[in-house]
Length: 305
Image 1 (cartoon, rainbow, N blue to C red):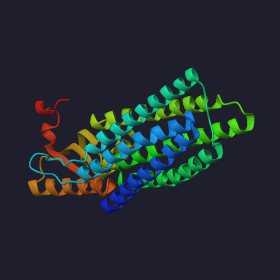
Image 2: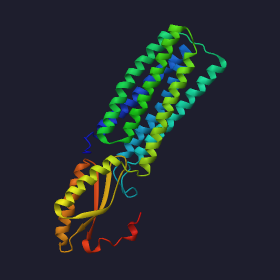
Image 3: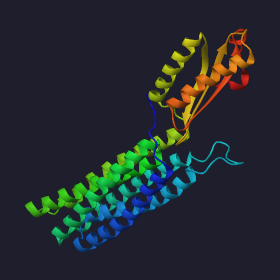
Image 4: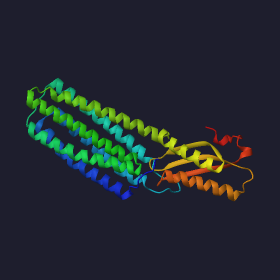
């Protein structure tokens, strides 16, 4: 069953601050390597890191915003900003890919000139290892907290790893074969992979902003509801759910026997709501609408979809 493990806001903030610090440190290292080696592939890695720093800065702000409680003008909280951040991160990744492709084409047109390969390779390898560890940690915390924001940041960090791997392969081939055209080739391959990841993040972000339902979560909720209502001789309809970035919102109509008192109907509904909320712990919000069986087929016009 889909039950989120608890990852506190402090854990999330700590990981995001670590990601921001790593982005600043690695950007400096990669720019230095790009200037010294004059490699298109190393430059592409540095360009991706520039965009990554901007994206992480935006994600750090969005994390604080997403954890603000509901207020008078945002009755459902602010956590949907997590999807906005994920989309921004996807757009930044795509922009980095375009920059990398531009630099590769420029190098093809004006020629390839590379020096200090060993230095560039050592800096790139160190950056790749740091980003690999950081990216996996971000994705892990993101999954524990159900945060698309942290998960998107982790995916972005891992795309940086893949671009670094492409750089290392290119530099190794140049060193071995003395054929410098491996440099723009590796840059193009890295850019296309980064572009694919960027579009995927944008697609997922739009799905979240438009309340796209998760089929896996829906099956689990329906399975639980089917069991709960069957035990009580009840039924339900007009089921819907959405995930707003951190919180799962679930609604359904619960059909009860006309003979039940208001108190009895409320007790049954509360027990079923609690079961669904527990399934989606710690951020499940469940609302049921009670209907007498005699009115089951009377559709409420205000709820037509």
